[in-house]
Length: 181
Ligand SMILES: CC(C)(COP(=O)(O)OP(=O)(O)OC[C@H]1O[C@@H](n2cnc3c(N)ncnc32)[C@H](O)[C@@H]1OP(=O)(O)O)[C@@H](O)C(=O)NCCC(=O)NCCS
Image (cartoon, rainbow, N blue to C red):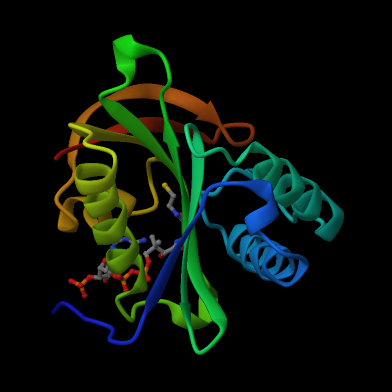
């Protein structure tokens, strides 16, 4: 049964100066906890250390650009519930689509509709604000994530078999997902 969570606020942050120290801390805490709980968010080898996550947050924040990487945060009552990154393409050959990465919700906010609300907002922004035709996303097979994205309207369009080597004898497919806008 679908859960619709009321009262979620969204914010798009499109430059480093838009992300203050408090939000950087919240992003790092969320990212570290999600990764250490086994989430597929770019830290395959666990546990991930605090310093490593803070470095990644600094890199991500410095990469923000109104014509490139844009950070979407979901919050409620001043607390971070979840976030994702949308990266636009500047090359005209591929400028009609963009890539979604780092989709995650805080452990405390799980299964209350925040993930689906993030995916609805990124689709809205891509369609209405950026006039895009497609969104692309890659995911790690074996964690049931395909079902989550399919429930948000995405389709699996292929996979790179055993492309992700997470350890000895632990290869996973990389699944390619598409949202037609
Ligand atoms: C995937 C994720 C973002 C979903 O967020 P969420 O806030 O729990 O999602 P929602 O509450 O909006 O759930 C929406 C639906 O997807 C389902 N769902 C959520 N996570 C799922 C998962 N990992 N596998 C399968 N289904 C899932 C929920 O049961 C719910 O279904 P329903 O509406 O029919 O009840 C969250 O589980 C997460 O942060 N995972 C770890 C990070 C990660 O692996 N990200 C993926 C990067 S590719």
